[in-house]
Amino acid sequence: MEPQDGSVRDVRSFFVRHPTPLLHTLDDAQLEARCPLDNGMHLVLPNTPIGDINRLPLELINQVLGRLDIPTLTTFRRVNQRAMHLVDSLPSYRRIWTTCPDILRAAVSLNANSFSCDTIFKTLIREKCEFCGEFFGGYLYLITCTRICHVCHWGLEHSPVEPSTAIRHFQELKMDYLVEKLKTLPQVHSLPGCYGPGRRRIVSEDRKTLIDRMAIMNLTKEDCGYAYPLANEPDDCPENPRRNMAIISAPYLSRQGQTSEWGLFCSLCANYLPFFEIKYRAQDMVPHFERWHVEDSDAPWYMFYPEAVMRWSNYSPAGRVY
Image (tube, rainbow, N blue to C red):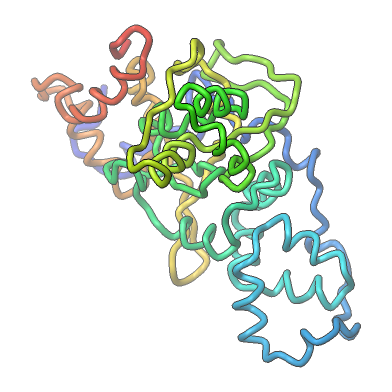
């Protein structure tokens, strides 16, 4: 019998840490084994000089380092113990490492160098999906460092493309001269592994270069004033593994203090795609339960999020929620 009092304790029992079926993303890529960072494993004596950087005040050093991307910061840490100490004591880097180290490992493994360490931290202290602003953004799109929800994750906007697709797009538009600019766009190099939704996951054995789709469209807009959409590929569907190759779970970090919240999945929504993998914070559990799962609710479940259903229908091969 479902609880009717709406208490957080009773409602929380219907929320779980992992969804069923499982969404295979970078969370399942064995990042700790592939990228074993040595943070906290050394006794650091920061007395070794590091050139003219030592002449700068610590506040200025933190501002400079905070604007570097994670792969560059990781390389800088290898210079000597002084460099290691400066990076490890960087406030934004330290907060990310202590709370969600897999995000650092993923950024290094994918060579995600299109955004800075401070940008990651500013993204993590936001709560809502940056694309729709409706749901809790439980995932991080690592090509552009965008916090997104599971519904928006299925959109073509977050379906990266390979260079061959981008080159063919420019050739069709007779803009071959834009091919040279592809290297300047946000992109990552994927990791081999299993990606995709549930049992429909697909094994990817090679590393692929993935370019942000919207950046390619914006490139044509800068050139001719119109963002030409890329033609849909045959595999541009929810089962496309490229959608999950640059996605990783991301917590919500409080601005003050050291608290974090990863969000939980509603087990009662397991039969409703794409809502079964939407994450909810503790403060959203009772409202969600009362709107969807109380016995005296006569409204159909899909009436509560009509825009989300429309977005999912546009990108689902079946055109429906099942």
